[in-house]
Length: 282
Image (cartoon, rainbow, N blue to C red; front, side):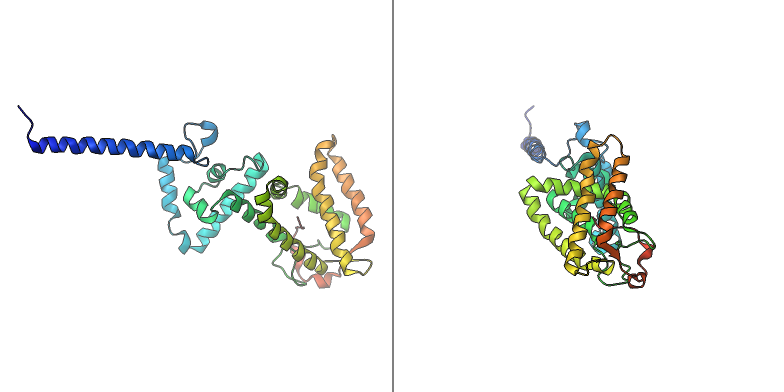
């Protein structure tokens, strides 16, 4: 019995829909393959423990309203920064990919790119985030900054604290990863240089609220602290050479003795109420 025209039309529509769906599916797969930052779920090493499609939809729903909720925005941004820092410290700059940061932070791709449109932007903002708390007080007694001198401590003790609590930390090592990468990455170097220069200028102004050069020459203070900061960061590259980790401790002791005649802390009354903080400059 021949098919009626209505049935033939329905069959043709169905076949067209199937063909169109097949073309769209192939196009979507090609686009996914062309995007290096899209996690391939068939590759366990790259996908890791990333969210499934169902989990991702839940994350996407939870990210709605980010723009209207400052507290949520701050929390999400903080989680991303923490993920970037841990990736840099554990895996190094080259392996700190968008996918790995997204997985560690537990956020959607949309939320991550909302804060950081590119990997380069993510690294620049992470560097600024790492430097922000250690710029020094902009005026004597300011409490909004982590740079301080512990009450009653000498320069050697301050340098040991600098190494243990700031430089030789996840944050300090993450910063080193970005700095080393920028040596051969011209685009990254161009992006972070203004932030580094601004930080250095601000630090050199602010350190005068805590220390002074014994020579009485203000311009020497910034030079002396630049020497201190260079030495302390350099311990990262010296440590692998040493069989005995105590050598680092001895180096800090001796360096403190060398620098002590040239630097002195300002009177405690000029420091205001900063003694509750315990950090130093990176």
